[in-house]
Amino acid sequence: MLVSERIGQFFLETDSGRDRLEYTEYGAGDAWVVLVHGQLMPRRMQQPLARALAAHGLHVVTVDLLGHGRSDRPADPLAYSMTAFGEQVIALLDHLGAPQAVIGGTSLGANVSLEVAVLAPERVKGLIIEMPVLDNAVEAGILAFAPILFAARFLPFTVNGVRRVTRPIPRGIVPFWAGIVLDTLDQRADAMAAVVHGLFFGRVAPSSKQRRAIMAPALVVGHPADPIHPAADAAMLAEEMPHAEFVQARSILEWRFRPERLDHAAADFARRCWKSPRRSRRTGV
Image (spheres, rainbow, N blue to C red):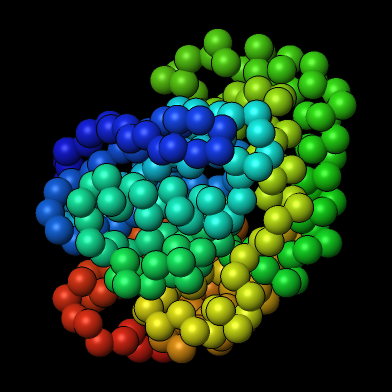
């Protein structure tokens, strides 16, 4: 099913100045869903899921957080934190005039969704959490992102050189996910260092006590054999939150290349969130 797509923008007053954020809307109506990308990735990574959800009658918005995609990229590490990202999602809801939304995301986006549920629980109709980064991911996260931070800070020519090579490649001539990889590599060293530094030295997610107090229904998706996003973290989160249900993906690639099962689970969950204020059932898919 074809759905309407519209690009918009809004502005935030931040410590770094007046910053611009860009987003895309899919579909229409009052059943809002906001989807957030992974770390350093563009909002376009959520395009396939956004289109699938919009085809089920949901009004979906994908957003580039500061430092990502087509939004502004201040080079100040103080501009970046999970809490700041959560506040940006709330500001997006205000801009859209959406009293509530199902908030969801992948990796970084999953943790940001949890932040929104802690900061403004009254705005959260439900949560779609894929690959949360929690207690069991600390060591792998350090190994993955410390070299990125080092390269961006002390060897900026490596990051900027990759950008000069990848940016001219037309995204329309490569497969969709290859284009997402190219977009992810399109980084400025100063901004990338600021993003990773701000997140690296801040809190990764709300505490276990705060997560246990999240009353919104939640769909938590975990992947096997993924050290940065261990399935144990997703399963733990689903146990912590009172109204969560856990879905085990077959692999880290399932939702990217064979998305039908998980798209259906996400659409069914989001529609249930909007049809009834009752808490979701703890079940499998």
